[in-house]
Amino acid sequence: MENKAVWDILGKITDLPTLPSVYFKVDKLLKDKQASIENVARIIEIDPAMSSSILRLVNSAFYGLSSKSSSIPHAIMIIGFNAVKNAIVSVSILDTLHIKDRYLNFNISDFWRHSVSVAVLSRQLAEKSRLVAPEDAFMAGLLHDIGKIIMLKYFKEDFGRVWKTMQETRCTFYDAEQENASIDHVQIGAYLARKWELPDHIVEAIAGHHYYMTSEASTGLVECVMLANALSNSGYQIHPDDYVFEGHIEKAVTPLLADTQSWLPQAIAEIDAAYEFFLEGKSPGT
Ligand SMILES: [Fe+2]
Ligand SMILES: [Fe+2]
Image (tube, rainbow, N blue to C red; front, side, top):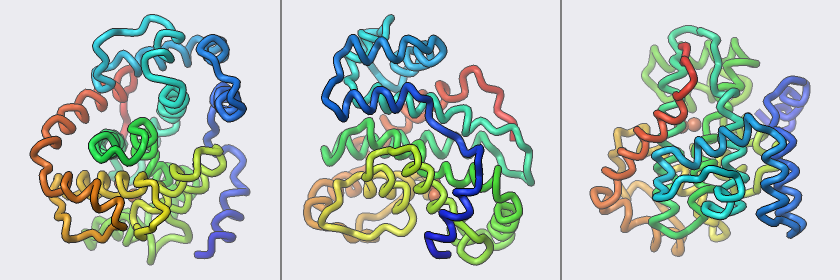
């Protein structure tokens, strides 16, 4: 389907998930180079629920910080402005991902686990390859399949056809979408990320996590998310020869794929810790 048609359908949905105004305020301060620990903290602290969620996230096991933060200014000092901005997105989308709708045998817990595992694996790949900011990779990984949830909520018939085809033929969700849906989760996710004014390379990582095209201009984020998704979907079995990368990406990524044993066990432990955090306080329905 042409992008314009996808945009037209999505543009008519009036209650798509939004990011809180605190995100846009912090983003503006950062873009205008006006951010200080004090003024960013002040904006976040206006919302006590947001503040406590951010502190809980920053202090959770998967952030792996040796000292705990008891205040937003301290958290900003430790993890930095960009990571705090991304933390606002991460905690904000929890409600979006937390759907209660029971539909066919779609299991939201499995969806969460996959999203969290791609977030953690993307962050690890970013950290080890030094290609992009690890916190950007975490957020892009967490969001990469958000289009599936939007499809389930707003394009239920399409989702139903895709889900049934997937179960009957054992193909991937993405392959089933191409024949059975008017729209796919990649297009929806990229649309949402753009609407939220997330940085271009995060939009591109969501858009490219299934049909990756190697590019000289790539920052490496799309590669981290695409590979993390492939690792998560294959039970951590992927082969470097299956991918073609531009020189600067290949140099950074191929050694990691050839030696997964040196970093995957730690990443898998982090996935468990991160998943605990995302489940805490939620009672996942299916
Ligand atoms: Fe996907
Ligand atoms: Fe995925």
